[in-house]
Image (cartoon, rainbow, N blue to C red; front, side, top):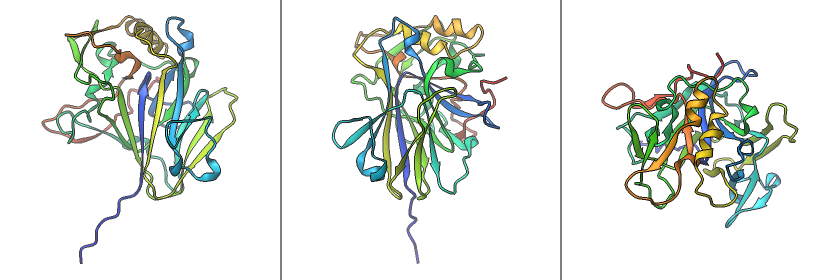
Length: 297
């Protein structure tokens, strides 16, 4: 008798806005993992203030934990993430940060799923490392564990717009996505999102328990409070997380539009450091992200 497999529920978290995604080893943890840092834009007067928010649908949150900071569109709520580290906890499941996977270029089953569509700072500052204390320059962060980290179709109105990143060797021009997607199997266990204060922070810890057995779609955004076309300062904000000479290289990059001026700016999107974008044509199809070049030497 053929028994249809039952898939466990998953959390899908879409990352939008100014973030730096990189391996880093926290002094409080024994191994490196991939982190998502949200740069502190208030340290850069030329950048409009950004808000760090988490949006969840009410139907996916246990009723007793439905305490958003403000209502969102439709039946959603918005949590303020400033001063917090976000992580996913699953009852009875041990975290496996070394089992975070991404698609090899050319192997992705759908368009935009490869991380090649994300602005890769390795092509600007190949030896870049994260400073030993990134929270001196970040207002919030996310700790990623086992799961998948991929690009997602851009939500901008001109997804095919070509951008040119300068200076970079070799020549760096491509379309960029404005959404990076993190998916983690909840394994049909009791699960919750944990908001813990950043190191040295004073925010009260919180938990957001999720409805067991239900797929959860959430959005984490780090976007300007008001529309803006200023992009140069975003590179400086990202550079604040870099050490040594790589700081100046990243701070000095410019991104210009290719063939047509269609508005927007990719530097208010994700940037990745030391996340491999493996080519297709052999080797892995789903490739484990290397945690070797973490921020701590």
